[in-house]
Length: 417
Image (cartoon, rainbow, N blue to C red; front, side, top):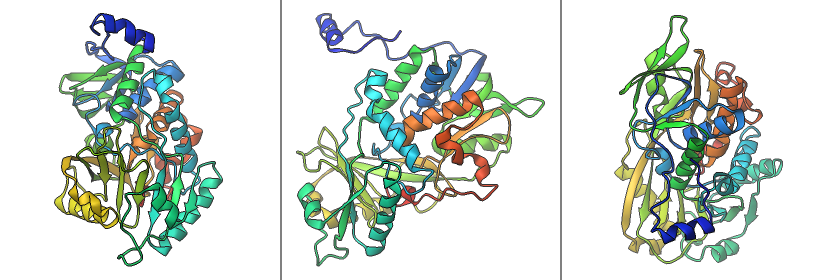
């Protein structure tokens, strides 16, 4: 099934009007039983299926998606890839994810339009600068880049940054450069993993909504009930972002998660203005410019729990005000589109990659801004499912850390993009 993409293939198929390309993934009849069911055909679900098949030889896998492939949070994010975290448990995980992303186009044989453009954190308060200097020292221990620069250098690298002068409400004090940061095309990440997983025998079933989990007489999770009937499996694995608790509640399994809405919006396309990712943690603003010229802009989450997928007017206004404080010329831009994604967040702001307390169930959740973690998240989740033991990179991310109060308090999640 897998077809190699290359310049020769592109030229050859151009002769036939590109009518001979095969679909990226196939449509299969739904079986009554699989070895493994993965609920959620987003980035983490598809990456898990791919690494489970590639690294562990598990091929009897069904990935179930209630909508269309890539229609959830993997297609509703600001595509920021970074490893500027604080905790010793977090930094190596995200360093590995950034590294995997850099080679992913070759691995999946699909151009992800990966752009390692770097991120600049604009610092506007002394407590924030002290905090980011602490993060810098922690990152240095794990090979992740973070370097302080002065105001003049910030303005040289971001010419459009006209605000934040000495007379402003929050003058710019310094900047922190994370040169490993990157962006790519989120649709291509989903398509690439789906295509590669399909070539290894994984079945992807769109428009197959999981309504509840099923347990057998011994209490083990043994399958799912969908809008297309019951499907049994030896292992059921959840990668459904903000809907994790919606499914675990059907079997009475409580989780330390809360769901919030995180919004973003995109401007009309303009000529190149910003060639780095800009993050302003003191204002709650981050932005970058796409290859098409659009500015992708994000801000703070909704203040309360929500399953909304729209953007809240107050959050939108606060984000725009913060942006215009630093980039006043952007007031002339028109809004092109906006969206919101519902994300779940654990009590310590770190993800959960763990078997559940009920046998047969595995959970990948708590990915607050989980786009950057897709490769490492899929790699480690697949290892757990196949071996029954946590991957070395995710040993601290198991569920029983909450029972033991062994939290991984990660401020790198909550104050940065």
